[in-house]
Image (cartoon, rainbow, N blue to C red; front, side, top):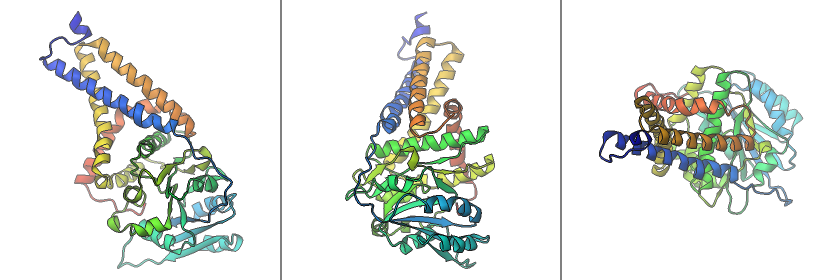
Length: 381
């Protein structure tokens, strides 16, 4: 009977597995208490009444005529006096150029440039961003994508209010529009959970990434780092690898307020989402050792946790402590997600978090193996 409640024989095989389960549970609980909950507890910088700094919004666009027609006015009509928008038309084959010409006639603070296609010289998004940053008139930059639109008219003001003499990097949140269907919920929760990691580590003084959909830094910082030179050959990395190189505890701040979010449309098929996820995974091996260890530790400990739970329940061993560990973690998980989902204005995702929690480590493992053994994905974005 006591064996059913708690392991007594220290040298037994099952006891070793139980203490492995206990260790995995403690690691999981630590992530929720010390990383994810920090995001909810993070105090926001107050918007001051100081003179608004000049800002350049940078957008790289390839075949984005429809998105620019829809989203660009929402950026150009921000309630902020001193800003410009620089759009780089990167080898577009659609009506992007015509859309930009028409909008320049209406909005004098819109500027654009272009890159012509050269079959002898292939390039990615980083070249377009670099040209846009070089063309910018202002030192303070706000980067976003053509398929994104700001959640409110004060997006620009709130994001740039975080700049100061010491704060040179502002990590914002880029969420996806809520649509019906399982895939939309899965993508939105995936985006949210990734944000818990990079916001959480940034609040711990260990920033390692941001998202190019909503990201601020200074032009001076960009050129001091020689731009994207160290990873220019990679299709991804204009946000995470660049931030990994320039962000520090002292110069980085996170911005969580819902009106400062950007919103875009999620992928419509599992295939396209997997292609996007796979491209993002290509940069992980270039992270610092500290971040690689802890980013791998979380899903690995989660897999061990669920494996141990299933093992002991199937064996009908140590049922009481095993179920206690499961429900302690589950309660903390749901509580933490509820608070952060509410803070980041993400709706109807709490239940999908249970499915994601169990299966996503397997998806992540599959994508890592695919990147090692499969063909490289060099799509522009």
